[in-house]
Amino acid sequence: MQPMSHQVMGYDRAITMFSPDGRLLQVEYAKKTVKQGSTAIGMVCRDGVLLVTDKRIIDPLVVADAVEKIWQIDDHIGATAAGILSDARVLIERAQLRAQVHRVTYDTSVDVLTIVKDIAALKQICTQSGGLRPFGVSLLIAGVDAEPVLFETDPTGIYFQYHAAVIGEGEIEIEEILKKEYSKELTIDDGMRLCIRAMKKVLDDNFNVERIDSAYIRTADKKFVKVKKDLLAKILKTVK
Image (cartoon, rainbow, N blue to C red; front, side):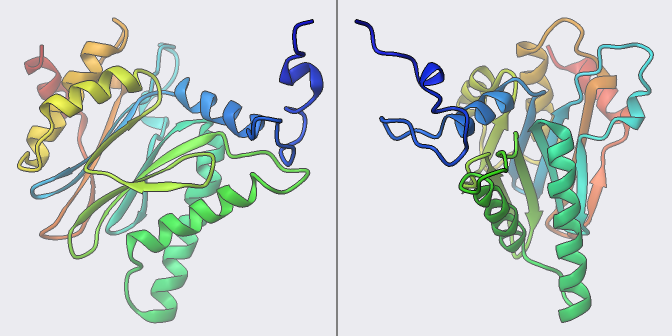
């Protein structure tokens, strides 16, 4: 007799229930949701840190500028996401509040790792508490403390620091491109070209400037800056 599947046996019905082989199936489902989300790339560059993302707007009736995929957490911290963006919004608003409370309390800016740990802790709680579900989103959190840093958090609540990272659709293919072409000596402008070229190569034929959102934080001034559409359009025309 063939063994019954985990789904038939009910191991995926509760977040707190481990399967016999030690898996939390609801968490694994959440991670699959992230892989179906629109692509987001983060990159630490020589002169700062960069975020580039695909807003995946394929409906011509949608106002592209109204779709937000990169968020400012503090003057020196930004984030993007892949997965369920409504889940991301809750986490981002929590991070923004945490940053403002820190600034009012201590009269100084919060460090990036404190924000990352706070988000990761909430995500982890949602993997072990009955009546909750995991956050179906991964975040790339980029900022500049003493130096530019980039972190990724996933639905399990774990976080890692990266030189460059990609989440969402096309993750495997774009990661291979980054492994071959990424260098710590890239400038923000160079990194932006690399990210857009990788997205254009991997994503579908409908990829255009209206789908791209990008922001950077330079080490020199530690200021979150959204990249203007005309610059993105210029870069998109030059990449093959």
